[in-house]
Amino acid sequence: MRPALRLRVRRFLATLLALPLALLVGTATGAVAAPPSAAQAMPGRHLEGMTRNLYLGADLTPLVSAKTPDAVQMAIGAILGQVVASDPPKRMAWVADEIAAQRPDLVGLQEAALWHIQTPAGGTITYDFTQLVIDALAAQGLHYRVAVTQTNFDSAVQLAGAPLPARFADRDVILVNADAGTPEVRVLDKGAAHYASQLVFPTLLGAVDFARGYVYVDVKSWGRTWRFVNTHFEAYPGFGPMPHDYTSDQARELLSVLPAGMPTVIAGDLNSRRDNPLLQGAAVLMDEGGFADAWTGLHPGDPGYTCCRAGNLAGGELDERIDYVVTRGDVVPTSAARVGVEPVAATAPRWPSDHAGVVAGIAVGPQPKGVGTGLLVGSRS
Image 1 (spheres, rainbow, N blue to C red):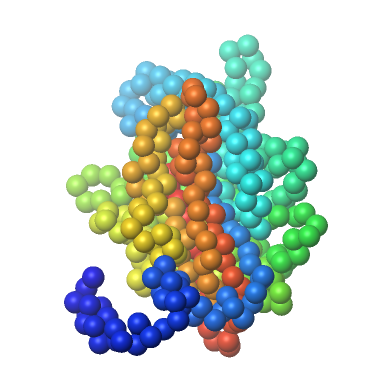
Image 2 (cartoon, rainbow, N blue to C red; image 1 turned 90 degrees about the horizontal axis):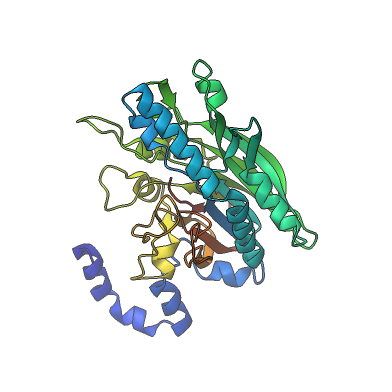
């Protein structure tokens, strides 16, 4: 505890001890983004937001780091083989099971990949991660629809001069629960943008920009209009002796475009944490944007790791938390839980993704004029 906070605790200890037990619990669990009365004022008016990094299915860094044409071909073959071995249809069905168990109102997907892989026999294997999730949900009688999609990278466009035996596109997506009986979310508007600050990878195939950006929907719930954003910050601090923190740049860009005073929910892959000085985007959102980390508040002392398993999904331990839910203003976080932590199968792929996901419950409280509200849900590549 910082000295100023320790002094404050001593100064007001008597007052705190006199508070009702329920209020003390609310303070201890860190529901600091809004007073507890906000949840009490809106009994039953709760929403759930989910963030899920779907994992592309392979590590692309061997292609980026390949130094010879032969190494490029070997890297491409290894990547495509790993994607197929990761069994995207099975993994996306497991993600659908997670969604079915939680029934979130809004889902932010990162790395919602599209793969068209040419087979040696001349055929094509197609994996559309978004459609695989939607189809698996529909098979369970659940109906989620795509509200907005943005393509961040498309090899057919960026590598047009160096044709590959595959097409790969990386996308960010927002899904909305379209089932009857969930009228709390009505989409009014939508949009998308790429960040100006981007890391460009130099490769033998040319300069590659794995663009990062965000998608959003403006929705109405119980007469209140608010924004849900899904974003994916850069995963790497650049190259060479002078690394650059793109996550902080992108966090500031995102803060600059949030409508003033409008309640906001942001779901995204933040690729950052406080104890990594080279990747501070999440800290920028909290320290400069006024967001509070719901996981830390609701699970004090629990690191809540969300990343990252081994690329082949055969093993590996989660050892950092880069999926977040942070709030500000008149929204009270009522829960924050991880999904995809335990293995689903005994052999690879054992998990739906190299990430765990986060599902956040929030109580929609009153929104006085001029007071903004935010929920941020995030993860990492």
